[in-house]
Image: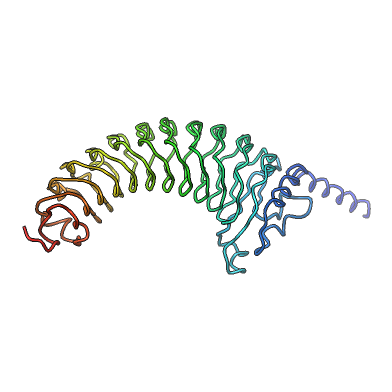
Length: 364
């Protein structure tokens, strides 16, 4: 009986060793831990023992090859460790280049810790299986790695709310599987890559709150799946391409707070866009009188531009317009009666050249 017990003990030990993560992965994780400091929650207290595939907070391994596949560390979470502490997370330090030794990594999330600084390790582009790179909500500086386009499996790139500088690398257009791009609220400059239209799988492109200049790339019309485009609060110039008849899925378009000029594209007003903010630009000319049954806007904000002429009569033909803002332009003439004007306030029409009629106090 004693011999049988020893036999099974040896078998279980062998199975445990086989299923444990390799020493190289464990060493990489401990280097990552050493480069970060989390003083309040004890996130890394579980990162002990020989087997990093079991019981290490935020670490998951591939069940077949027993290599580290996912690191998921979020500073804002509903995990019990946060609920017990009654606080969100705060972490300082930097992301160690040792992350690049985890060459089976498919998902890296170190997000919303507010104090992590330093640069994105350049070697991160050598991870061939990486599908998610999410570093939102830190204080990361430096540039987006120049050869980011090497990450051919990447589907999510989220670097928003950091202090990244420099331009968007041209190689980004080679991320052929990318679906979600979020670079909001950094200090990125230069022009948008002219070949962004190569990102044909992308559904969301969020780049607001940077210092990006140059034109809106015409090639964006090649992204059939694009539903959310936010380029607001930058320094974009030139005209809005007349491309919206080629973008049937686009629902949200935010270009507000730029230096865009020229006329309003006719195709935009009869597209599938339902939230459209073009305010605080230098758009001019007449608002095209082409509204129709396909025009469905929950929000249409054209305020703080240089539009002139009358309000288009065809707006009453739109299937729905919820919030309409035409204030701070050079519009003139009577405000039409009926929908959608009957539920709008005077603030939607103030500071124009000579608009008159309800809801303004000025009579025609």
